[in-house]
Length: 457
Image 1 (cartoon, rainbow, N blue to C red):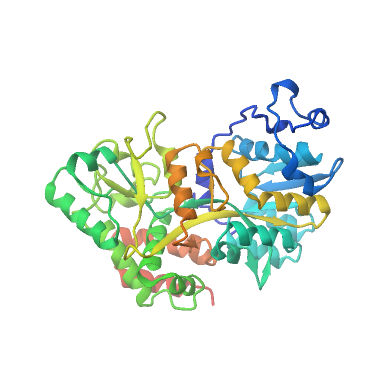
Image 2: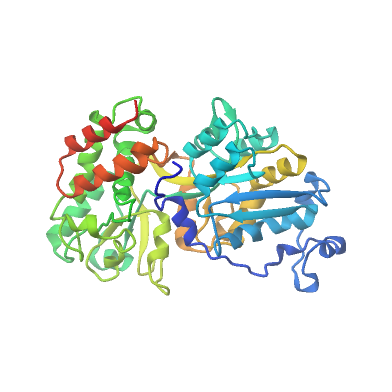
């Protein structure tokens, strides 16, 4: 969706990343020759270069990487490349640009693409492949994806039957933030089904221990409305299932069909119910004027108990806030219809190549390994991956560990954010605007009808 205002979906998750330079001295590999090639000598902690020998001697070669992640969040990426650089001799030239979504397309169309692009949306990936400049992934990358990711993830890196890009990082959106202390003090249990979530909310209303159970906010500049789209996507996924969700995203069923109507009405039971919202912030309409960054903060003030938002929301709590199962605030999985189903809504990145030089193929392969995932986890905060080889103990925070545990759950069925896959006229325009109108009083049927009318013919 280039050229459109970018909502803080996966990119916000990266804003929580601490560019931990850690003088982590992955910079040195285990031999004296490796140290001479750029390590930090005696101050560096030697690492085993044996996992890198399969990539060969790449001294004198370079690989360019282009991404949306900029300073200081890009430092953790650069640090994660150091073992590969020092053990193979290659140089990785990283470039971050806030206008990445627009510029990467311009560069590809002009015949000047990077060697590797870190692509944050399946829709953009398809557009880049359509330029004819992208290169299908090697069999080695495909084998790694088959080993370390679910079929859902491989499908998002596939265009017209050809596999192009391995997944990289991921974020989970199917979470509800809450106060563990408030739950413990009042005997509340984390719900395991949607019915239990509704029952819990009603009990909070009846108990009157808190002004309102839920707090919410959808204001986000030109992207105002996007949090409602996440709510709705979660409920389409839960009420109608992943296959119907896929059809809905691809417009194989109409946006104003019964599936959409049921999902938005289900969201309305929470967001448009004056008994449920908007704790510490106002009435239902205040949701439209409350920024998404501020929306969950009343949990810490005892004004609300529940806030549906992604794993990246942890970055919005003040420094020093304990975000943990025994802390001031934490999150639980937004449950499915029953305990047997585990739908997960989220976002992620994909490593797409535009060159098939040996060094580029080798680096793309490295990025698809559990080796890279664990190095990246060791130098980051606020970053997780759906890579099954990721050692969760390496993750820096309880919320990261929760997200990774959900992503690695064999029962989980992952689906990428729907609006990020829809045409820009819908996903970053009509859907946002009509969702905002819905919050401020427009009825469900008018809302879904208006979005359907806006769908490109």
